[in-house]
Image (cartoon, rainbow, N blue to C red):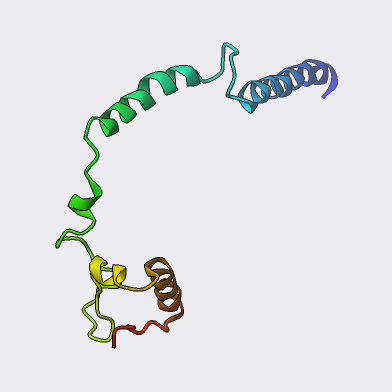
Length: 117
């Protein structure tokens, strides 16, 4: 190779140092350096627009949707062995929160039976 080895080694070292410098620049993209992502702009403009769109609709009252006839029943199924129960039926339980929690646990284990029967 001879004398061509010296310039080839210098060029290769500049290339490797370039990779090293580029890696350091993209290693931490969040901050306030000139090459960092502008997260302040992202949060102020983009996310604020999304939040404005979400918050522009008034929140419905729970009594309007929680006990609606169109609301899905817990465990509603086409299978006759697993009947659906309305929210009113769950509230008739002595401890509705614990009854629903136990029913969900039993349903996951495949042990769910309707306690009304």
